[in-house]
Length: 166
Image (cartoon, rainbow, N blue to C red):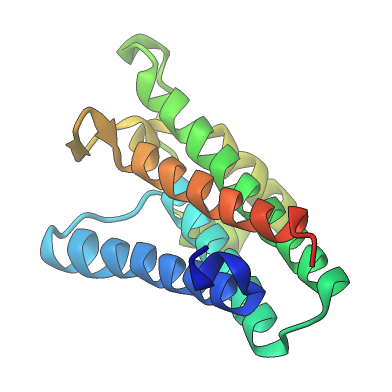
């Protein structure tokens, strides 16, 4: 069996490098090279990727026993599922007919300055017209679609940690 599956530490490093890869693609390819500006939902998805990476990084450094491995794995799955939920909502917004797309709202910076965090989260998750626009796709999947694929992969790796026997 491959080493990264048999060792919790190696699997956590694999998750960390997966998150670094996802963030590098977002920041270098899409923002720098393609000059795409992330919408508020994209930013929330990035926070989830970073959260998964931080959890796995701490787990890799800590290298806990079986109980700790399961706890870190569970936290990884929860963070990946949260990001996947935002990605799913984003995909749903992109699939709406044009007449049902919510109107564009203010930017995330403005929302953070004016409203309490709970209201900002609620407004961002409702989405707006900027989130419904498909600006890039590959093999029929938009950016949030590919991000959802990444979250599924991260959640599966986290599940390996949770279901690990010893």
